Length: 255
Image (cartoon, rainbow, N blue to C red; front, side):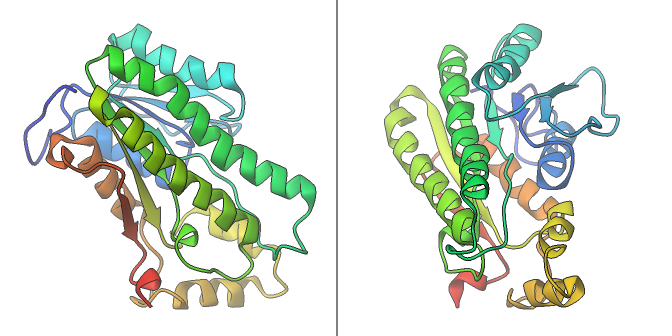
């Protein structure tokens, strides 16, 4: 993988793909990568593309991460535009607030499809491109719900648990090829997802308050904090970080 210096510009010259990059964690990661010198293909599914970014180093492309040909097209865009791929961030995900009996089969399939299949497809197409580029870094956005029991997040916890296990398996499979695979497990993060998930509660504001309070540091995680960890994992500073799950949850999983 192309090197970089510690500090500002440490991702200089790296070529990256970030899925779910229209808002929240994905957009924060794309911005941080661009600030540190990388070139980024921003994959998004929403009607509106990500806000304007440096045109010479940022490309936005619609993609449904559950559709193999669309994920392959994201990777191909980076390779065709910039000659290779160094970093893949599998960030796209969805969730549902429900216990196991309350979860519909349709919601189960949707959450598993986006979170697990989407991550699988991202690695399936990115890893060969990284091998051809001399190595790289895969960063899977997991969740602390994969590590601890979170009320009313049954299928989401299962999906993120699968992402965690897939990360560790892929890390061992590909480390000798120069491809590092790691995960980040954020706690509840201040993104549009909070409004979507709390909308289904009788008292959305109380639900929001409880979500914030369950993190010992007393606030939501900021997307920029997750982005900072992603930048570290993408850089050569993390050369010996393989198969790790970097937890950013204000202490929730330490209880």
